[in-house]
Picture 1 (tube, rainbow, N blue to C red):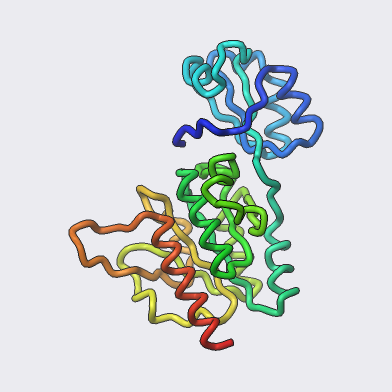
Picture 2: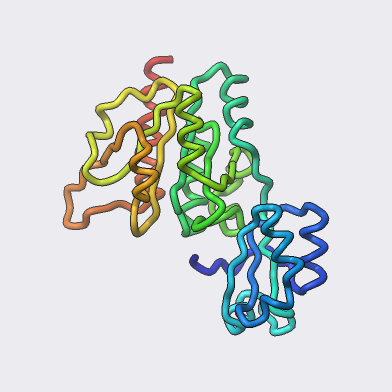
Length: 249
């Protein structure tokens, strides 16, 4: 995952363990690979709470923490609280609108995630869903790039995107995955309950996620490159949904 120098940190064995015990909102834990045995209590607590644990080299943790006095462990703290997927659906219901959700499948660049959140707020998205692993989280950089939109946008973080997608389908949402080789993006009706799935910057949609989408849609490319920045592609699709809904309002 790209390094984010503005992450909020809790450093040191006791401080991290107390943060875990207190229920503090933690995105993930970084542990020096050669010192994981010294942090069995913290690692066990992370497994209990479903918090990812990432092993890193000591030099990398020195760089992230800005000090060598980290005792081989640090916690990355969320800059904003996450919600549940049900909260997003409840918001749509309270507005008497069909749910409109953006699902980020492995968006690892915090600048891209922040830009997606900013555009989502401007285009009447009810909420964003990200996975717990292999994804940027709600760090200070994401909040800064979102330019205040994070205060108004619900973001849910889930363990399994495929399971979440299938639960949304059971609730009546149509799932549109953005990837190459799909149907034209303008040829679909997005006025009903729907979710747009945007893939990672390098690999696009994962195969499992792609197979579980109802439709694969594509944005045509007329230049010499074959893909758009993830946040740009997401923005184009979000505004097509917003355009259709405003026309039919």
